[in-house]
Image (cartoon, rainbow, N blue to C red; front, side):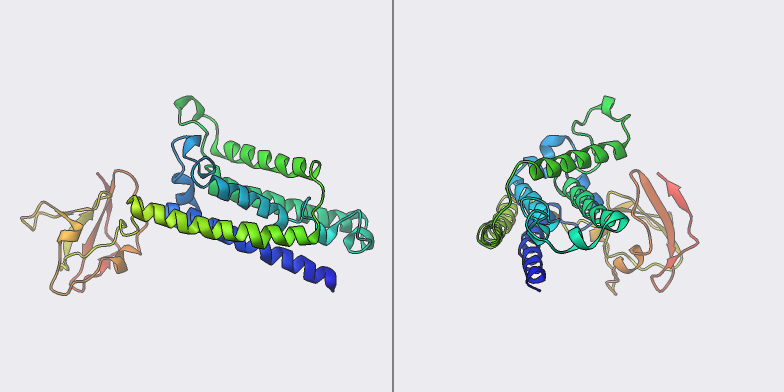
Length: 281
């Protein structure tokens, strides 16, 4: 029972810090999409969040990951050399191996999360043409393997913490530091004007036209068909008496690719004709 309480306290203590670190990354990106987080770090390793103002959060995240995966020096719930209990004694053979496989699967998962949040995901460290021939999965795997090496390196290097040291580090160091960094990150984004533009999505007010063809370009412009005199108008400049938002119909379309337009027909209710054809600009 006491071992379960100790293990639960350790997980809660460091999960709070991990959550606040992820909040800092999401503030920088302005999106919960993992692909957007990776693309926000494109352009070279100097744009990776691990080498930017989030470097302290990268360290906090990785150390907290050690505690979450119960690896040395945070393996207090399953200290093999001290605790004569648990799966180290109760299980053997493949049952014992499955516990260790689960531990290493956790290491791979947390390493992959670290790569996505701080190390540019599947992108090459240099934005040069001669590295484009390397598959993106290779870059991602290399980064994950490097972090796994650090996991094993730390296990063989550092001694185990006492339990009071474990709790002090989580609650008196990592939690205040991560909270402070959330405030500093948001303040920096607001005062420098670099806050992600969450409104720059393909959502707009569009004219409700019966049986008319309208083409929405990726740059946010509408090209109305020859039934109208207007050629190209900005989306946010087109309004209707009903002020019908385009967000309801736009959700039913996939995002436009670069240089692509989608042609569709609005009926008299302002709904989209799904049999509309697609054209490439």
